[in-house]
Amino acid sequence: MKKWFNKLMAMLPGNNVYKKEYNKELQRFEALFNYASIGILVTNQQGQIVLINDFALTQFGYDRDELVGEYIERLLPKRFRDRHVDHRNHYNHHPQSRPMGIGLDLFASKKDGTEFPVEISLSQYKHEEGAFVIAYINNITERKKAEEKIEKLNNELEHKISERTQQLTNALEQLEHSKQEVMAALDKEKELSELKSRFVSMASHEFRTPLSTILSSAFLVNQYTTEAEQPKRSKHIQRIISSVTLLTEVLNDFLSVGKIEEGGVQVRSITFDIVQHINSTIQELQDIVQEGQRITYEHEGATSVHLDPSLLKHILLNLLGNAIKFSGKHTVIAVHTEHTGNSVILKVKDAGIGISHEDQQHLFERFFRGNNVSNIQGTGLGLHIVSRYAELMNGNITCESVLNEGTTFIVTFRQS
Image 1 (cartoon, helix red, strand yellow):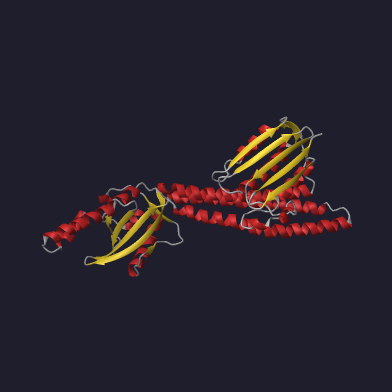
Image 2 (cartoon, one colour):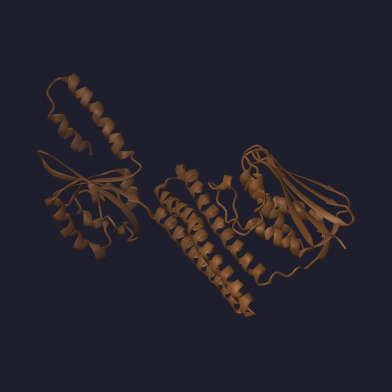
């Protein structure tokens, strides 16, 4: 490279000031060329390598004197070399600055024969010694690995959605087959028709946003290839995980409704320590609380209760999930349980957006969503499921709420 620079120096006027300033510029260019964090090489019109930077030499495992003067095909896998000569000649006849091999998987070959995927951009320039092509070569092995991981995640997601959708379809078909009398069958058919219609409408809406998030985040992950961009990659991977979790929750809600409607939910009450059970459930939600949010818990009375722990956990997860979702940052969500002897009372209180008096009348109906939550994702099934689970355990649920001040849900279970 210095030899090439010396030729340029010889062409300068005799003025030493010009030569000194030009020499500085050449030194800056040499540093830019040799210390670039991407492979750069220059070829002449015959496809021979005339310049190559240190980064490219490291990528390919060669010494400089092994490549300078060699044809560019030396750096390609053998199976592509003959074909590449035609591509090179075509480019020389129609030179332009552009990415190489758009839509194709490109590969390069190291000195030891190892192949690796690359991304190549081309540009060209001319001076009195002829026309030259500059190639910028980027090793995208890590990006390809990330793409494979994302593709695997997407395939698993598609399989899970298909599997859960099939389970839901089966549940709906079982509901159809359970019709006993003509009038009961007609009522069930109307209800089932409505459920299918609402499911299609809800699913198309609820699936679109997380799937779009997954697609856009997967694309952006591909753009961040350096170690310094790991926080950006982690951010979008977390968005993908959150979207998958949301899709799973939506499908679980539909499956739960199907089981309830067909009488497939069995209550298995046992005696257990409610304080330990509530604390364990709250701990599971710590990863989804918003910035500055805190969940507090207090209990009064005896800690031993006789309930179905699984259904109680589902009720608490749903109520706390809503409280987290509909409350702002830096707010307190209070959980309180009490054993009065005849009853077990569970209260979940938040300082969120609240529920209007009109909406409270329909709060536990299937698919119902309040007028002030249209911009927040949800299926409108959660509170319906909670109320049905409470009924199955000889309980009931009520709501106390004021718009923009907060909401308290009170679930009361009778103890025999």
